[in-house]
Length: 312
Ligand SMILES: [Zn+2]
Ligand SMILES: [Zn+2]
Image (cartoon, rainbow, N blue to C red):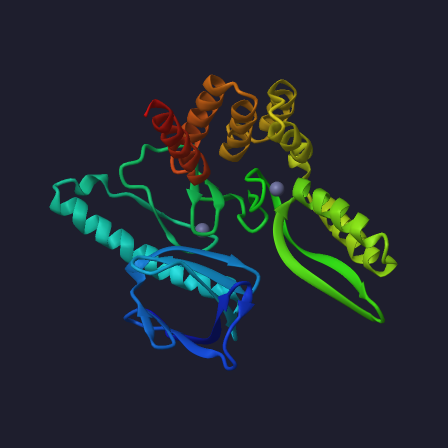
């Protein structure tokens, strides 16, 4: 049973919402209605939310972005993911049964976003990853890290605490003061870089310094105490200084045994530092601990593609 939800939206092109009037959208029994278009739930490949905007990748269309009104984009995304993941897993079940492999069908329900996580064919592991809301669950299905706070950073690709920030540039045009801002969702290290950038640009125009300092304070507050030291470790990792990074990660891992996101970061330290052997074995460890951890899976695919390219 699907309850109908209506909302308004505009398509986003080149960073701007387009069209004079917003269009009607609706979650219906048959699919997601976006203006004239009806998208079947099983055609939805990926959804990502950043603030009011929903990015969608679907089968047979170019990826597109909409700005959502009348409902929080995050809520809309959760509803869409919940329906499409349930329908896709039913299709998977039918396919497996047809192939005489019905016993391989296994799913979990994410307590954060209520999506169906398909675990068919995967071994059981310590953690389960929900690719829909990017949260990490333990083997009993309890939330370990919510993807709203801890996930892979949009800009540097490291697992860390991530927040949305508004970047301010005040500028002075002869007699007119104005400002421009844009939203970015980054980890604490990237927030620090953003702070330095905005701080020095804004230094000339005193007004802008206040938002810069607010941004820095935001990046320093509210960290989970047992993830203390993670930005420092990640900074070393992104420079490939894996010997120093290893020391940091080892101590953080004591509070989070075999955490797949931490092992993924540590793998990156070795890969960036040119120690591919250890990098790959850390990725394997990450996937052993969380068999469906998408960032590590994607890294393995990228590495094997790069190796194939080299061999050609
Ligand atoms: Zn989820
Ligand atoms: Zn970052």
